[in-house]
Image 1 (cartoon, rainbow, N blue to C red):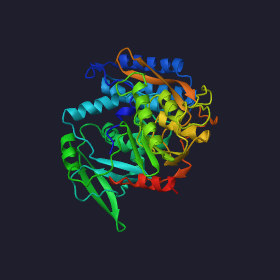
Image 2 (image 1 turned 90 degrees about the vertical axis):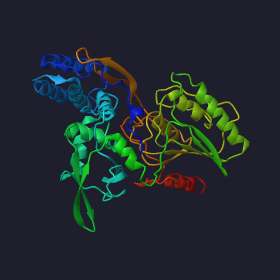
Image 3 (image 1 turned 90 degrees about the horizontal axis):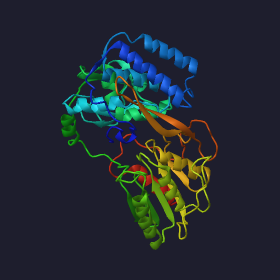
Image 4 (image 1 turned 45 degrees about the horizontal axis):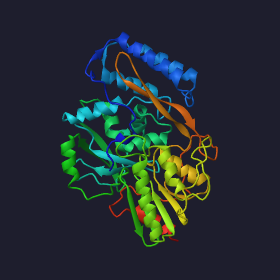
Length: 426
């Protein structure tokens, strides 16, 4: 199971004075700065929630600020306001820093990871140590409240372009969201399951990170996909590539390290005369478009675009890979991975297989930040919109050409990858 989506966080954590308390006047001043700056700087601020409704929410939220609050409480309040706009890159990520700090000091949290499959919620990983909870089992309620209601309320704390993205983020962020919802004094929840058509309830105590880690070691291993690492292998006639994060491991915009990896990988593929290339972008956080373009140039047979209004990129000089190409994605193929998948699909450069992405093919990007004067909280916002090459401006995920269902529990044998190999070698 992945850790919290640290790779998806664009902003710094809480300011150094996170424990400070702000007066109601200071909070209102920051709130006014927040909304005014977003209106001035984000050209698509009202793309999902129109201005009259946003103005109404702003006034109601402003009126509700009547007493002093700590900076973490202010961050929670402001993030919920920003998230209401339904733009994933408009965000205040200080909640994540507050939760990490809480855990680091021995705080206790919900010890399960859940997974959404076809609208139902299942136990994907059990770190509670309770034998009465089974992996793969469906959960119907939390504290006797329907789980869909709990998840919908938890999603209010997350910036997301649509409900599927919010629910996908909650697969890893739910312990944090539940902590925000219940408060740090909560030390357990009650889960409702059903077995043989009989409902039963299980009290689940919250645990520290150390306690959860100890319990996890007692569980059977599950598949862990490292979206950052790079891998190139040859399996018979199939060249298999996990390009890893679309970024230099050492930071910065220099793509020399990434290019060297691709040079070596594709030289090896050609030396072995492989006729099929499978590019695995599952659980990949993405990164820079220049890296995506470099990868695409290795198999493209004609000039291509990453975005509808973007420049044409020429194929890599010969020799290039000239066999069949498949791109494997899942719900956690983010950023430049979703861009690449949409681009190869629209321009018929490869077949896309797997499950739909939570991220969008047409989305807002070019992230910038500003700091609120009183609290020091950092706010991120997008400044541009990138449209997929086909010109579809609707905010849709990337839907594969061939679907592969991802099971609730993926064992280390990687069942999805086995299905992918079956598809590409037919």
